[in-house]
Structure formats: C-alpha cells, structure tokens
Length: 127
Length: 473
Image 1 (tube, rainbow over the protein chains, first blue to last red):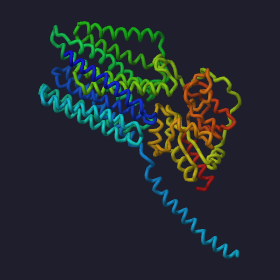
Image 2 (tube, rainbow over the protein chains, first blue to last red; image 1 turned 60 degrees about the vertical axis):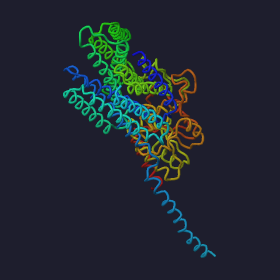
Image 3 (cartoon, helix red, strand yellow; image 1 turned 90 degrees about the vertical axis):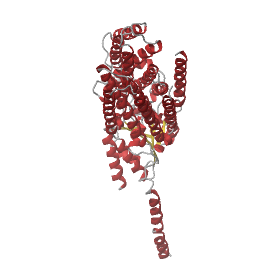
C-alpha cells in the first residue's frame, strides 16, 4: 500500500512535469484547439466511471453510475469531436486559390504575347 | 496481478504516450491536425481495455451493464451532436460545458467509490482514498458548477457583467470553510458518505458564487483554469480507484491547463488573482479616460476607404472581437482575396487574445479558409507595420491602443499591435464605445486614422463591393 501510494505519487508528479514541458512550447495560434484537446484528454474519467459502475449494486449506485457514464462520455466524445473540427480547418491554402494561379499566370503571359505581334504590327505600320 | 490486469496497465501506458505525443504535435499548425486523432486513438484503446477488464472481472451486474451502456451512449450522442453543430464563435462555451461534465463525472466517481466502501456500518476508508476522494469531490464539484456558470455567461444566458452581491466575499469564505470542514471531518474518521455529499454541495454553491462576480472578458481565463482543475480532479479520481491511467492523463491536463491559463492571463495583461477577485470587465461603462487624448476622430466614407485599399501595395488586416461577434470572418477573407487578386500583399495580424480567447481568431479565420501562412502573430506583424500602406482594423480596440506603451493607464504593459506605425489606418467599428479596459483609444484620434462606422460584417461587405466597383472587377 505504501509503495503503491509512492508509485502513484511519483507518476502524478512526473506527469505534471511532462505537462508543463509540452505546453510551454505551443504558439498562441493553437491555444484554443489546445485547450479543447486537453479538455478531451480528461475525458479519460470515462474509464473511472466504468470501473466505478462495475461495482454498483443498488439504486443509488446505478443512478450515480448512469450520471458518471453520461457526463464522462459527453466530455470525451464531444471534446475530441470539436477539437477535430477545429484542427481540420488548419489547412494550407485551399486548392481553389493556388490551382487557378498558374493558369492565371499563363493567361497573363498569353495576353502578353497577344499584344506582342500587334505591337510588332503597329511598329511595322509605323515604320 | 493477473495477466489481463498487466495487459490493461500496458494499454493505459500506450494511451498516455498517445496523449503526450498528441499534445506535442500541437506545437505547430502543420502537425497539429495529426495530434487529435492520435490522442483519440489512445482514448479508444484505454476504454476498450477497461471494457475487457470489467467484463473479465465479472463483478458487474446485468443492470450495471445496461446503466453504463445507456449513460455512455446518451452522453456520447449529446457530445457528438453539440460538437458538430456548434458555431466556431461559440467554441469557448462548449469547451466549458464539456469541462463541466468532466469535473462532475470525476466527483461522482469518487463519491461512488466512497459509498461502496462505507455501505457497512463501522467500515473504514484508507487514508489515501479518503484524502483523494475529498479533494476530488471538492475540485470536481466546484469545476462543474463554475464551468456551467462560465458557459452561461459567454452564451448570454447569464449577464456577462460581474454580478457582485453584498457580502459575497464573506459568503464565499464561509462556503469554502464549510465544504473543506465537512471534507476534513470525513477524513478524520467519520466515514459516512453523507459528510462527503455535504462537502460536494458546499463546493457546488461555491463554484457558482465564485464565477458569478467575474466579468465576461475574463471568462476564457477562468475556463482554462477550471479545465486545469478538472485535470487535477481526474488525477485524484485516479488515486481513489488506483488507476495510473487517470493519474497520468489528469496530471497532464492539470499542468498543461495551468500553463495555458498563465499564458492567457499574461496576454490579456491580467493577473490570475485579480481575475478571481472579480468585478472587472463591465465592458460598456466609462470608468477611466486615458490622459492625453485630444482632437476629434476623422470619419471616412466607404468609397474613400475602398480607394485607399485598392491602391495600396501592402495591407494588414487586424481582426478583433467585433469581427468574431458579427461573424464577419468570411467577408474579411473575401475582401482579402479581392485585394490579393489586384497584386496587393494582404496579411492578417493576430493579437494573441483576439477573439474570445487566445488562438480563437485563428480558428475563425481558418474556418473562413484563410490559410494559416497568411496569419501573422504579433511578434512577426509588429516589425512590418512601418512598411504597411494601410492597416484595416476590424472590431479590435484595446489591442491596438498606443496608450499601452505609456505607464499609468489600465492598459499599460499590455503587448499591442503597433498599427499606429503604419502609413494609414482604417478602423471599422460600430461606435466610439470602449473596449474591456474602458478607456479611449488614442489611435482613433490620430491624423492618419479614418473611422468607418459600421457593423463589421456589413462594413467589410460594402468595402469589397466598393473596391469591385472602383476597379471594375
């Protein structure tokens, strides 16, 4: 029991240190998705709710088990869904914009060559 | 320890690695998208392993399975639907809602365990379990009610202004004493779960009375802090039921949430104790006037603003909360694309706290398909302002106020976007109302600043139409 408590405390403290270390490097651009992502991670309480509900055997236990499972599942599923939706938007320039760019460039070149002969022609007329 | 328990323990470890690596990938926008699925994969593994363990242990009754399944399905459905339907501007309150239920679940888990341990008269609870369960119940319940109030304030169901009741501080002190006192009494050997229930209710009320006096402007920092608290509550639940998986994930969130809270508070030039003291951020009252504000503002017509934009070489758009509130991110992107098609260099300068919380504006603009390479952070944007022809400020106020550079104003010391160093400034704003700091913006009275009084959405759309008419596009 003492060694187990000691082991748990060590895990707790080391995990805290990992948390500090990982987050101190994140740009503010990503703070909102990050808060949402860490919010989803504490949805692991669903595991706790499952283990607690497994030993419920009376009405009070079932009611509390239902509440814990519903709350925890909402936290974890909603948390990951909304984080995914946010991050899905962090794309590089979407296709419609760069794709027309080369044709546009080609078009400009084309129109550039278009007046070219005309100018030659006018030059020819002028001379 | 049976073989299955060992395997389950290993799976929790793998899940923990997935959580840490997932957060690690969020260091850059380019890899951030891979972080969330990885983390979610770890979560699925952990839940699957727990299912196997529960089935193998065989202690769960048929009713238990039904209750667990029904609860989980209902919660998952509600979470999924609300996450799919939410507008990106409402993200902060949804995160707060998910945080509330997470904290509530953590508190209930500890309560269930204590009820089970104390169902026979004269039962005792091991020291670590009683201490951890009291901490879990206190923090979890406080987070639950506090996060609900925070979400309600941002959603507008509860007035965003600080609600300060007479004697509130004394009441809070008494409530905290009562909640902690009942918890201590429980720990001291009165192993009756009703003491813990009393403690839980005390913490629930304390959560409400603590968050109500805090203004809406500070709410994102409060949500982040409560998010960290939920992490700690979950870690405590891990101590109660002796699960390393919960301890690791909870501590990870507790620490990262704590750092994030500090970063947010710093970016808003607010201290966490001052935020918790409440009463700040009334938003619409005049409680101070920055010294040195002289002269009048110069209104500018849509047509004049369009001419300035259409013939600029380099334009910087500074979006703020007003843009988010008006849902004008798509109009901003359309105007930016229109100007770019004329060969103008267009970038967005994002203050760390633009929008409702740090990084929120990036999400809103990303939703409108603005590529993140076009979003400049403050440190990158500031050196570029002197070479910028026109800065278009849309619904941003305090974060552009040059008064922040001088000591002695409520904004002093806050890092700002130095838009006043650009050649010309156009400000789209509904009125001369103040930002959260409640002071005049000296930018608005400068000679180079033109004020375009309009709602952000309409103003941007009219500007785009006017630019189009001007260049015959």
